[in-house]
Image (cartoon, rainbow, N blue to C red; front, side):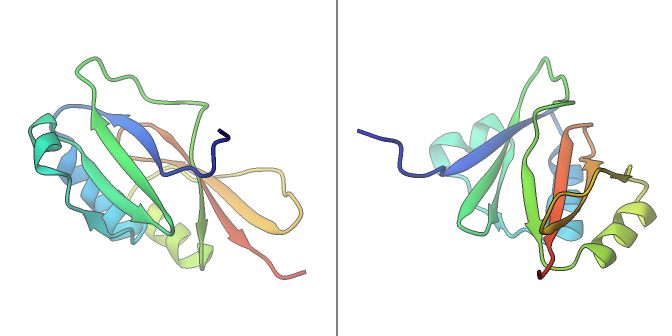
Length: 122
């Protein structure tokens, strides 16, 4: 049987990082938070909706940020998000252009690498 889809991506976060994650992924990136199933709530962490996929943040007691592996998130309008990231003190780094996208890298409050891409019409 072949794999037919990706359901979610999980990033790690440190213990107690839920408020910072809500601010970054919810407030700045505009991703709606999803309720975690009751059986998983005691573990901490958060789930967010991202288009047809979900982004899960799981608590890791020995947390180390992902500095290379990263999600690539499509955004509607990169410029306002870029301004909000800068205002919030988050790093912003442009990268080599690739056809069809404007893209930047940032990091979540825990140092995990995040790529943001805006589709540009051809």
